[in-house]
Length: 353
Image 1 (cartoon, rainbow, N blue to C red):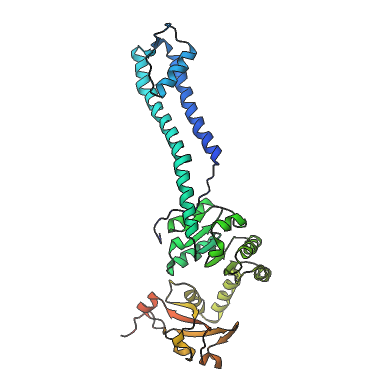
Image 2 (tube, rainbow, N blue to C red):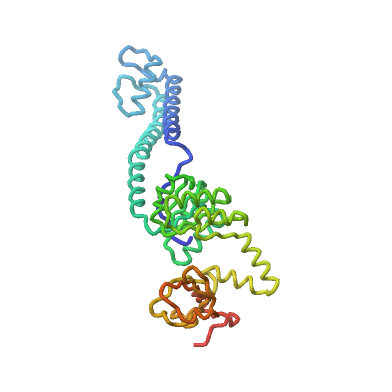
């Protein structure tokens, strides 16, 4: 587990409220009916101090006052067997029925009110968070990588219709919500317009693009990254409002092709993509101290690869990269903690101090 357990934002239940209530009441009535039948079968062991005759109505009445521990004393067990039935059978049933009603009152009154209050408090505090829509293979890997990169789990909200998948996200400490991410009310509930970023991986390109459209309509300024698997859908995803479109099939093809020309190219690309490797790619704004410097003289000590200036990508070999300006976005390679320990390009040996 990469993080402590965290109370979820909202958890949809498989059984609706009326169904859960019906099950509880049905179980309680079933136990009461069982005791009525036992008392009726053993009615010879009961005595009615009023008329001396124990009718079926008397049995029902005696069962109810026995289970509720009222005990008026007008009907009482007189034989050893009847008293044994009261002690061994009726008493456990009495506790079971009591627990059912107390549990129902707690679940439907106290707990649900508290959960609603807590959920509203969490929603009010949601800001600058990361929303992950879809917790399949890509979504779960992205959440794990975010946590490895230092993102606090409680700053991540995961939405998926599968309770089983959400259980894994909850175990990492993320806020979770079992719901349909294509619905406006779902996205409004997680304050999508106040999110830092939105990651979309619904498993189907058409669903992912629909989610992107919905998110963009509700949050015009929030960056959206989406996973699509068909090349034809990449342009559609961008038209829907996605800032970044990722095609895992295409990326896999690049790794395979790279392995033909070099045995270590695919390994290095995978290393760049994960913070668990020895190096990683970082995108950041140029600092004030770096303005006027060359891309080869970054203050972080990283190796600058390119800058983005006015929407144009410029490589480290181009003249513009020799004079960094305010507003430039630089992409650089920096060593991770693992890289600092083992070095990079030294066959795993530590660098000399």
